[in-house]
Image (cartoon, rainbow, N blue to C red):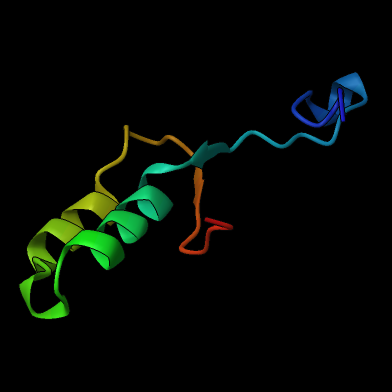
Length: 65
């Protein structure tokens, strides 16, 4: 969709979020390599909240992998 990220004023849909691939990649790594009891909750919390100031992101926890 070529006009997806253009502003509404320019005839687009105005979608201005960035797809954050870090979170699904982190889930895959944790599920494959780290036993559940060794997951660092502080690391997970920091990873989910550490973003650039005011950057709009879409993060998801599902993956086709």
